[in-house]
Length: 262
Image (cartoon, rainbow, N blue to C red; front, side, top):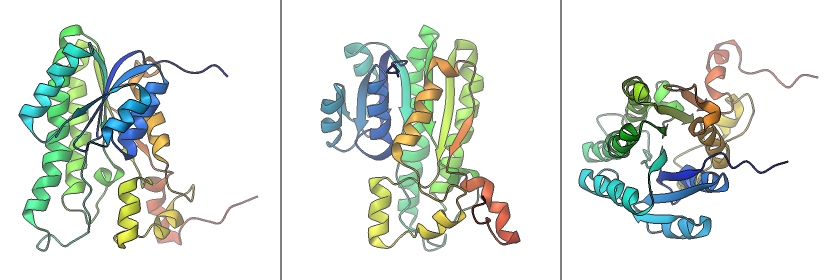
């Protein structure tokens, strides 16, 4: 089988030091991209070194920093063809609204919602000037339903909404904007939550039609597809990659998913 190298040019991946962001950085590099790994953690340097990319320390919640990084990458690496906004903060516990500290609420919204918008804005400007570019935002299935995550869920719903609005705004300039909404993905952050006892994945596996969690590499494959010319006619979509979790919700009233057949 011929190796697929369908992402030539410079790709920027925020949150690229670990988890879904790291998987995306590795996938894009494997497909021919020169990858700029952006993260607030210096661990991103090792990822960049391993894939032949460059690392940039960056807090996407800081407007001046992300604007400066966008200018620096354009001037030192060349025109950015692809942007993946994977930087984000998980809500660690499902507290009731009156128990959840407002500073923690603000931190999640600042990075997950505002940071995604700022990243699209500052990297998208040059794409608009060149009349080409592809952006894939990492949202979440949590943003497509009601959950007890009273900061994370609305922030990810906002990412889906901004994906749609930017796709409509920028489409005439040939800049595509799409989103991928992961289901429960076995990232280092989830592993840490499991170790703390903050999450129980047994129920997820039970209600998922495919009866398993998702590997970060599976999210990266979907992101790479939407970024590539194979998806040239696709913009404004939100693609759930969730092992079927969303489609199983209505089955619980009828006794849950059935046992395997055949």
